[in-house]
Length: 144
Image (cartoon, rainbow, N blue to C red; front, side):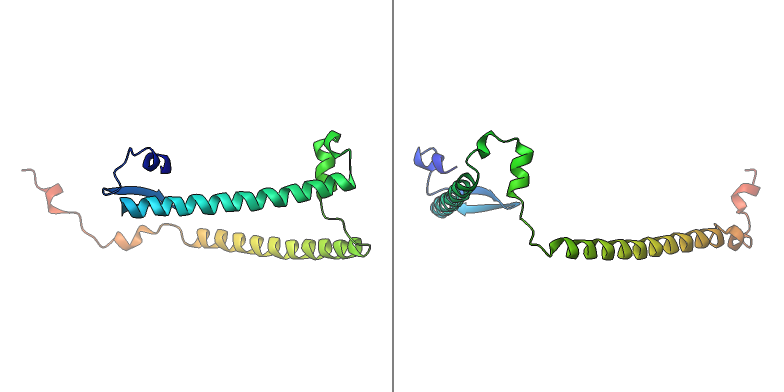
């Protein structure tokens, strides 16, 4: 869209429709152009910052593992994972035990809720007895 302004395909004086973040906005041409330029500059800044961070991390990885480029992707992913400290396995076992216990509690609650729903279904069947007092309409009895 910014290229259209640069190539003068759009008049700066005319209002322009801009789609952004799930919304359509109608902005004056000058405002739309400046807004697009600002977004473009912000994006370029973010790309440059991310690119430098990635380069630093890549250099750190290659310093630690010079042959990382020839490794299998699964091995690279394993190397990039956070390394755990010596006490971490004990903590991990404790966390897993707690997860199992809470999982059992959640399953028990789900089973109880399912049984309760099933009981309600048995007692709350469709009951048409409330319609017994309604008489049939006269239109059915009339022959004509």
